Length: 77
Image 1 (cartoon, helix red, strand yellow):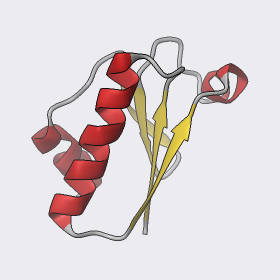
Image 2 (tube, rainbow, N blue to C red):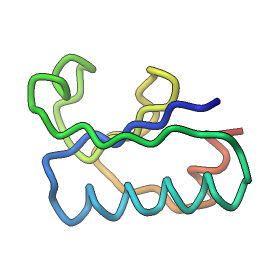
Image 3 (spheres, rainbow, N blue to C red):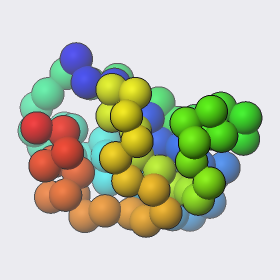
C-alpha cells in the first residue's frame, strides 16, 4: 500500500494537489492511504519550506507546485 501525504496549510493549490493525488491513485487502481498534513510543525519536519508538497512513502517527491496527474502517476509507479 502506498502512503500518500499532501503537505499544505489548506491553500487552493494544496487542495488541488490533494484532489489530483487522489484521482491519480484511483485511476491506477492501487491500494493507497491519502493524508492531508496541515500542521506547520509536521510540514517542517519533512524539511519542506514551500507548499504544496507531495510525499510518497515518507519521501518528498514534489514541493512548491501542483504536478499533472500523469506526473503523479509516474511518481506512484
